[in-house]
Amino acid sequence: MDIKLKNKLYDKSFYVVGLFATLIGLVVLLTLLINVAIDGFSRLGWQFITNYPSRKPAEAGVLSAWVGTVWVAVLTLLAAFPIGVAAATYLEEYSKRNWLRELIEINITNLSAVPSIIYGLLGLELFVRGMNMDRSVISGALTLAILILPLIIISTREAIRAIQPTIREASLALGATKWQTIRNQVLPAAMPSILTGTILAISRAIGEASPLITIGALTYVAFLPTSPISSDFPYISVKGLFDPFTVLPIQIFNWVSRPQKGFLINAAAGIMVLLIIVFFMNGIATYLRYRYEKRIKW
Image (cartoon, rainbow, N blue to C red; front, side, top):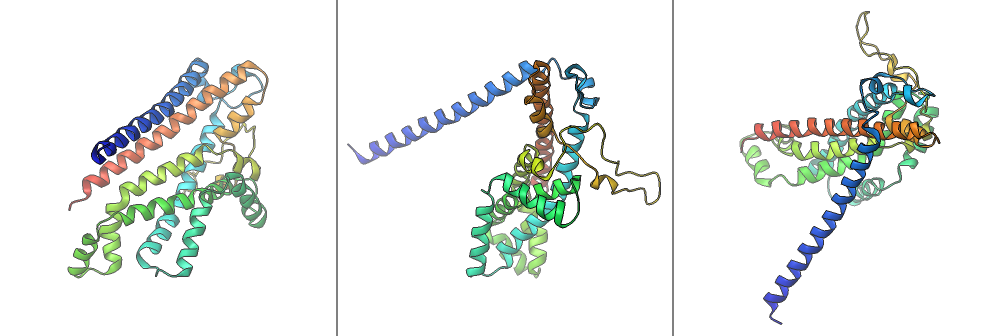
């Protein structure tokens, strides 16, 4: 057989196999989404969003769960994003290639594949017991921040590595310092890809239940964390950071474990609320990515 014909046959085969694998994933995902929507759409409504959990399925809601999810997600992002970007920038732009850097890189790669429950045990020992933060919002957020930190570092490094060297060389040739080049040229150019990796990491954190169960997050919460806005000077309160909390994955897990059919319907509706939050955060990331891409002028 002719070599060119053989190569074309291989290309066609890989194309068909890849397309088939993609379609299988999409069909399975679509089937799950349709199944959840059929089960939970009838329960989804304003009352379900604004009610606290209840022992009666018809009166139960997800107010404390989705508010806790938003609290934890925002705090996780605030803790993990700057540290992850700074660590990745140092490794790519400042650190010398030696045995220490290789050791750090290997450990970061390995940490990204560690089961999430291990991070829960780490958070329990470090934040809940060691730092006396108790089973609070801040301890949960910091635990999830450690969980997604390797993912943010890896995606940020890949984004920085993709920037053309000529951009750095042109900036340095015009008299800019290395830090000015990184701050004004490299990071803005890499930011769209960094945001994409970050939102994927946050999406994983939002869906995690085992680390938060390990540190002792509650399964039944009939109150909200204290508002960060206070009526007294300085009009900002951090008391809510140390309040008990729950999140949507834990609430869904609690409902699924109950035998009543009404709670299974509530669980499906809770999954829909969780998906809405994830899609909303992805929408914000897409918007920010678009803004950064428009601001970049080569």
